[in-house]
Each structure stands twice: as structure tokens, then as C-alpha cells.
View 1 (cartoon, rainbow, N blue to C red):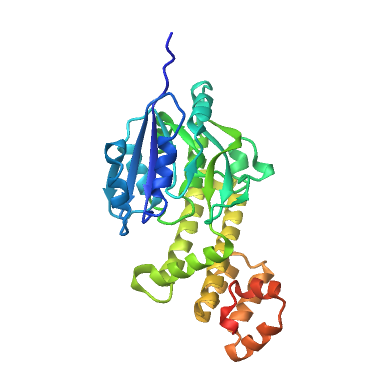
View 2 (view 1 turned 45 degrees about the vertical axis):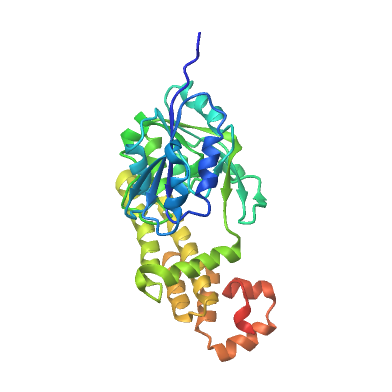
Length: 345
């Protein structure tokens, strides 16, 4: 008797991912999996050479091109333009291991009521070196109950998940109010968990590529300078704040008082994000923008004393800050102003 393998749609959203998209697609093509795999790549308004990279794959992939609408909308577009029984998501800068689908699919097909399976990941830096051989902290290495997810920001990478189509239909997909890099996946998981249980596989089944500290700050600087033709980064900050506030509003509407702890943790995470932007602004020499980010971070989390110290540092005139910085231990300076330290010279 021949075993029928399920069909899977690999949904890959990409925006200006010419440097990494081939690696992601190749990792899907290399899957050791007996069923049918369709690859749907959503080109979300890329302005680099992403389209040229995608054309090289010919009919091995399906490409859907749209104006830039953000990750949530791109994933939803991919779902609508696919036919697989199961939906697996992959970000354009990540990479599946060859047995990912072969290991994960049985966890859904053999377990009644499971609405999602996900796994751990290996963290890789931009040079290709392993940063950590895990992504999920020890306290979260199990499939969560809904109440656990309402009490903590649960570490689940979108590139690790597989979802039955019938389950994603129940949630109406990813909320397209989100336009940035926070909230759209976490809120989707909360909605999905209401319709069934999750399955967690405590093994790394993908390579999650992340930037180092210096590179992250460099990306923040680029973002602050690039948005909407402005020079002061105001739109980038507004977008960051908007994502967190959208998330807070939605979870309050959906879960009421049960979400109180999650809202508090979200505000703390928002504050940390603003501090990162403050350090990026400080590194680029924009002290006014750094002060604004610090003020907003304090509003979100007034108990973090380090933020007050960073605000104080951003208010100090350069004629005083530069000689003082030369006397500081590098660890303290890094905490106040972020790397690198070229502005001291």
C-alpha cells in the first residue's frame, strides 16, 4: 500500500533580499520530503535585483509581485496564491535544514487537533559562524498553553512553523495592520492557539541568520536615515511605536484583562527597541534623535535607570563628552553610547 504524503506550500516573502533569497529557496528545493512542495515567493515591492534572482529559477517557483505592503500582507498573499494542504513559512534571509519538513509534517498529520508545529533553530551571524546552537530559551522548550503565551513573549520563529491550511483559515491569516518587524507573528500565534494545540520539536531545524551588535546598529542607522525621504528618523520611530501599540490594542480587545502581563512585557520590549534606536542615533552623531528615543523609552518603561543615564549622555555637549569618553572603561562607554567609538577620535 502506497503512503500518501501531504502537499506543502513554502511561503517566502522577500523585500530587497537579493543577497539571501537564493539561499532560502535552495533550502526548500533541497528538502528530503516525499510529498509535493510548491514554492511561492512574494516579491513585496523590492527595488534591488531580487526580481532577477527569482527569474533564474524559472518554473521551479511561483513568483507573486506586489507593491510594498509589509511582512504580514506578503505572507497572506502567499497563502492565497498557494494550494498546499499545509503552509510552511520561510523568511528570505533564513535557511531550512534538509529534513525540516520530513520531521515536522508527521507531527501534524498524526496528531488530531494540532494547529501548528514549530522547532528550535541555530543562530548564525552574517559571516556564517554559529552564534548559538539554539534560539529558544530553556524555560520555553515546550509547547505553550494559551495562558503561558499571555504571560510571556514566546520565542517562535516564523521560519520554523508549519500550519494546516484549515487552521490558518480560522484566524484570517496575519493582521495586515502591522507594517514593521514586531507583532504580526506573535499576534497570529495567539489567535491560532485558541483553535488547537501546538507541537514543539526540541531540535534545530533551520538556520536563523542574525546580525551582530555592530551590524544591528548599522542597520538601525540606515533605517533612521532612509525612511520616507526624511533625515531625522521620525517616521522610523513612529512606525516602531505604532507596531507595539497595534499589538497592545489587539491583545486587549481579544483577551481583555488576561493580557495584562503581556501588555506590560510588550511595553518593556518597546522601550528596549527605542533604546537600540537611540544608540544607533548616537553612533551616527544625531544626539537630538538619541534624546527623543530615550525620552520615549522612559515613557514606556520608567523603571529602567540605564535609559536615564543614556539620556543624560545624549544631552552632554560634545566638547565635554569626547574627553570624558576617552577616560571611560570601554564597557561603560558601550553601554551609554553603543559601538563603534570612532566619533571619539
